[in-house]
Length: 152
Image 1 (tube, rainbow, N blue to C red):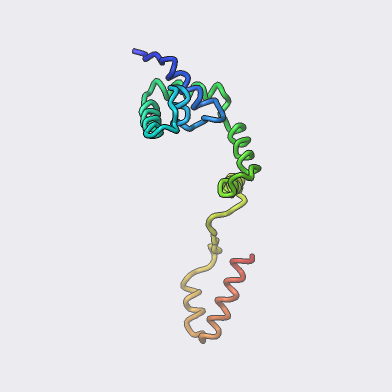
Image 2: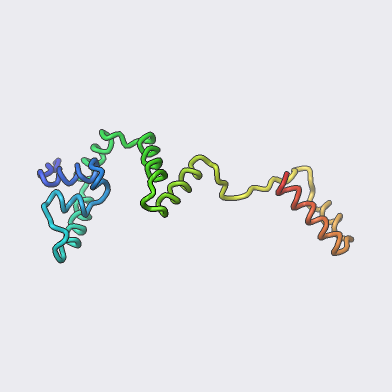
């Protein structure tokens, strides 16, 4: 049996999924749809819990998903939103996070370092090579290997 949305539930979904001022903010969308004055004592927590409850209903989330699809929530839109966050100056913490996300998506930041060893090199040969070296010789070899793998 398919559950019908009430007018207020439909408005809540539209505000939550399509209106920039309320987008993704269940508390604000619920307060607007149900005419709740959030400045009054206790009303904020009521709106928050009721919005959270609504968002657990399958028929509500299906309608929100439909609205998001119709609204064009796709890679292009997300890229534009990311650009908006990068270009805004109101919250520099959010701006920095968006720049990090952009760099990560564009693979401009490598999070880990990969070291590739020549497959021809045998560990036993290496052990035999260093077995009779002095500490100074080992330190020099370490420096040479570090330079080889980090700069080459």
